[in-house]
Amino acid sequence: MITLATLPNATEQQVFDQVANHLLTQKEKCLQDNNNVACQYHNDHLRCAAGCLISKEEYEINTSIAGTSYFEGNNWDVLVEDYGVPSDHKELITELQTIHDDICPDHWKRHLEETAFSWGLDFNFQDK
Image 1 (cartoon, rainbow, N blue to C red):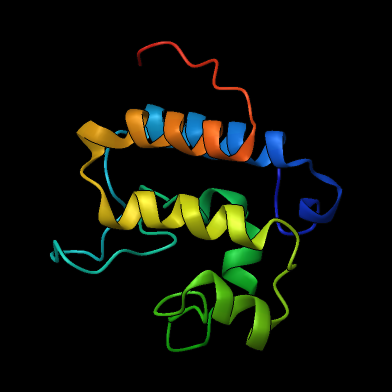
Image 2 (cartoon, rainbow, N blue to C red):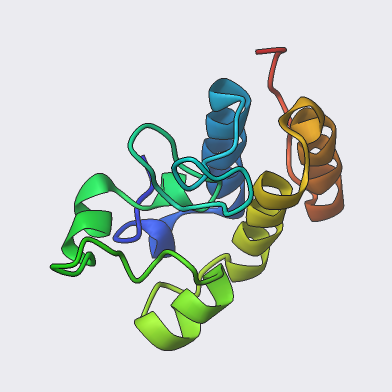
């Protein structure tokens, strides 16, 4: 499993595979509790596209005493620039995060296929 600690050693294909498999298995957006608008990296039960690359331990260690993680409310670019998240695969992760945040889950598979094609990656996922 790829985490922030191992992200620099992962290939684009490995990052894509983990995120695509996660999204196609989860089949729903990771949203702020009782809010159908604001996406989150982690909530009590789900993770977003980029959130599945952040281990529970990495997420919790970066959570304040007030219970808010610096991940929340920031896009991946901000996390890379301001919080030291690895910059490896930044553009791919940002594109995958956009699929999670902006596309209806019923259409994720098609958008993931298009992303794989545009990045020259394999897409070998059966209907889930």
